[in-house]
Length: 207
Ligand SMILES: [Ca+2]
Image (cartoon, rainbow, N blue to C red; front, side):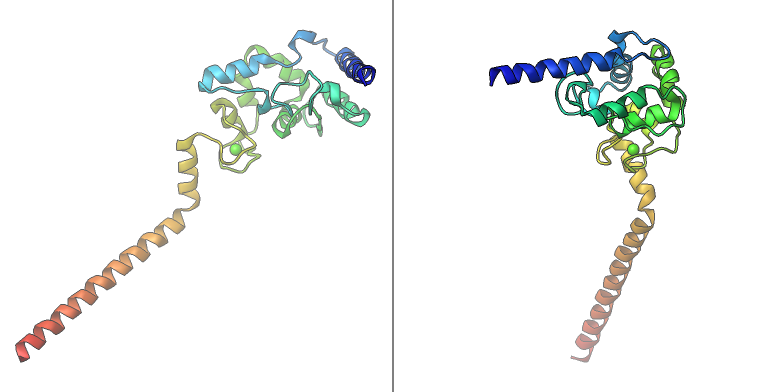
């Protein structure tokens, strides 16, 4: 059993090393594999704590033996990972198993080459993403969620003020109808009270 566990660990580590050794056209240093520059920028810009789960499948990043990490990938997933790594130019369909939907969208939108180029100025990532992209459909674009440090894959997670304004705009017709209904009820009640008052006055006059 011990031998089997060791064997599994060694196998996983070998797979990780092979994956890291895949030659990239623009020779990225291995230390920068997880690109912490973007995470650091988001935290400084948004004043929120952000982990690797903003773009990666695993909240601890791509290196390791856990779910969505290189050491646990199947041969088929390794193929998808290597295809994503070779997506130098934008516009290619990306389905990297170590990235989540937002991470894959980034590489599809700008390509790996530009992504690596702008790591020295991570704010440019927001400019490079389309203002129309909104994966979770909460009305706040993925680019804005990146700057805000909120989760672009969770429609309930976002800047409170922005979510309020988005929902106000979305439900403005419902709000107007609700106000009209309340006013109508109040108007009806006022007239009912007035009518009752008139009837009581008439009765007293007759008595
Ligand atoms: Ca969003």
